[in-house]
Image (cartoon, rainbow, N blue to C red; front, side):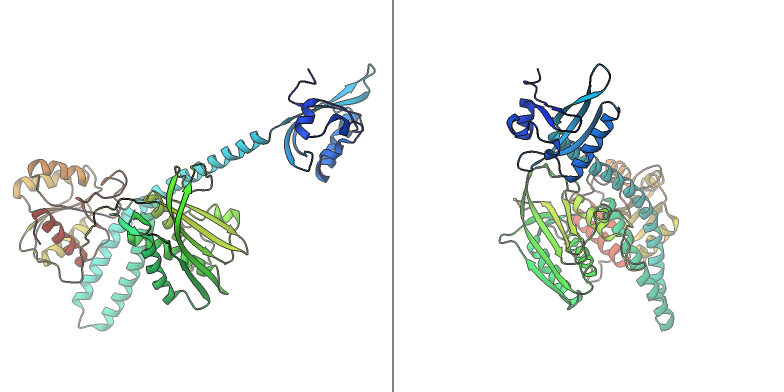
Length: 505
């Protein structure tokens, strides 16, 4: 039984000299019995292992009884192997330790599997934590965007009414600038939470790198060497082009801040083949060929503890007042929204590389057209707009904007009231919030389309929460404007929605 056991079974003197060596030990350690008999067991261990081995033998000699533990030992040639060991004393009739039995089993593969499982569990816990933080951030952004829309537009109204008071206008413009900063923060929150609605299109990553490079060359500083390495072939992904630029710029600015004394920043695009078993991807991706963006720097680098937290919102290593902690959370949100993943490799004192993987498009989709606000919006011409907004102050702002734009406005505070007003007065276009008590905007649209299937609808929201689509990606036939919006943005979008529905040009 001993000779045919797969486990290594070794006999030892109480002092640790090998007295028996079965075939299992030969297979496990690579030494024959002739090579090992009479030699000390310390030849199978490094210095720390030999010290631990000596301690175990000493305890057994002093009556400690059997010992079971895991340890790393060395095969012939110095190759390490992880073992589960059971060390048992052999006693004579008087209870004196006259020998020791050691049974060793190879657990290297089991430990590697356990490490992979632990990595998977950590990655899952990270995803759950990000989801929880995302729900919190999304809820805050929803209410805050309504407030921003109110304050921003009333500030614009005041600026229009004080053209004869330049000092007042200067103060108001400072307030408007601060509002723009607050708007950008909430948009970053929504990008991280995937709570905003986007309309992606085909994007060439080579072109994205070129645009980012043109911008960075003016702003990144002469102490940074900027290198771009576009792909030899076009790399097309389906994403929001503005968000791809946001990813590149956020990573580039972080890289710049990590190189205060200068260094090299590299933006690169290529393809990568994944086998689907990678454990360092956030989130994991199935096997396949992907477009890959790389942003590398020769900066200060990050510790493993920092890398583990960098995508959490509001987590930052920058000094107070130098960062919001939303930049990388925004990057994470954009990449996952586009169906991709991100990998981070960093070494303190060496630098950092972010690798972004996005689904590679092989068949181009239809090109999308986006309205421009460079010219004055088309007049309302007395068209009736049914405005549905549960925030009274924001409803008054929207009513004032549309009235000044030549529209006739009927305002409702909720879905049921909107149905009643439509039955009494009708309307030419519906402008509705997405998230409302009693009835959501999409549900209201369904009911009104039962009455008039051709009624144009424009949704407005600071946080759609998936109500406009299960993936937060808008279909081509859904018109949407993000809160907070300016008067010009709203009038342009409303005119474009009307023209699209009626076929006007």
